[in-house]
Amino acid sequence: MGEIVKMDIQNSNEMKFNGLLKDKSFINGDWVSADDKSTFEVINPFDNSLITNVASLGGQETRRAIDCATEAFKTWSKTTAEERSNLLKKLYQLQMDYLDDLAQILTLEQGKPLKESRGEIKYGASFIEWFAEEARRTYGDTIPSHGVDKRIITIKQPVGVVAAITPWNFPNAMITRKIAPALAAGCTIIVKPAKQTPLSALALAALVEKAGFPKGVFNVITANTAREIGDEFTSNSLVRKISFTGSTKVGKTLMRQCADTVKKVSMELGGNAPFIVFEDANIDNAVSGAIASKFRNAGQTCVCTNRIFVHDKIYETFVDKFTKAVRKLKLGSGLDEKTEIGPLINKDAVEFIDGLVKKSVSEGAELILGGQQIDNMENFYPPTILSNVNSDMEIFKNEIFGSIAPIIKFNDEAEVIRMANDTPFGLASYFYTNDYAKIWRVSEGLEYGMVGVNTGMISTTVAPFGGVKESGNGREGSKYGMDDYLEIKYLCIGGI
Ligand code: SIN
Image (cartoon, rainbow, N blue to C red):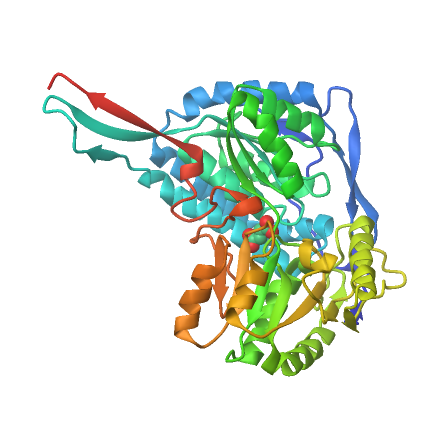
């Protein structure tokens, strides 16, 4: 089990929220309560203490927000790219100015270590900065025409009102990755953050207000249950696009619901990332890469390593070095600077992970490290290593979303590519080798949207983030990220 750091949250750090801690939804530039005044609790996953109560809105308020965003779209879509870019640059600067406050709010409601929260706020800000720049580069084309009296050009226009449903694992960056390209393109947007982490979304709304964005352009609806809001988002014909990050199960439901009004959808869904260590790999680098990609956010990311495949010839050495390194990871309150692994999001997550470990052991896996819930730390699960895992086991097929590292032995390249692809998911994948020909062959053979070669950290604003198969569609970040929020229109000009 990793070392445990305990601390008293109340006395941990001086907090200067500067008006960033909000408890109401943000619609049309106003901070609003639910029509029936209902609220829900936001809980600190470190110790299950109550942080605050936040407004819990429903379908009626969502309809109003959609109407406001529709009205705001009429003028926002007509602004120049430069105006939108300048406002986004202001928002970027504000997010960087309040980095420490935002990181603290994030750690309080999500649990991840402050170091990671600061990283997330910078990562989130980088999307705002990037799309502030991209706003001015949404070029069209001129196309050689099919008739002597005709000319053809394309222009790009914003899709319209966008609804975004965002997860609790990255309460800031998964929002900025959607709102920045949407606003840059000239769309207006309504965000429904996860009920576990509404405070980071509301803090962002406070910065949007401070930056001076027009009313109705950016809205946040907080709610205890997602169903009513999701039903309204997907059925309302004024909403032209849904962008969702979350589970494949919910993504499929949203896609079905969007069919009736034929909305554009972007889906960033579940993963089951393979991490392959070939016999010629630098083992120490592979160990560090596996730790970075497995235990980031306590294993709660869609791109976290889910299955570690190690070549027979180096299996024992890798398992030994990996176990020694994992044993040193420090668990504790995210607010303690020494903490490397915080709590899981809640008790249900811990029970799910514990169940997976027990099932794996009953199916024949060997427990090398961890595997026991921790007394008096209800939402924590220690970093756990399972060896002798095989493709028949439940853990091989499931997205773990927690701190278990299952290790599988392999003998040959074709076999490991087949096993890596033996899943409906196709988001991130990783492998380590020093053989350049293998780098090409394996990269091309993996059925994944993203491949990390000799690295466990692939997330960046400048590259297209997204998956294939049941991991979703669309790309976020990079020069491709604007496309999801733009329509291409073709103009055929005759009589020339
Ligand atoms: C995710 O878990 O959905 C996103 C992780 C990332 O952007 O690195």
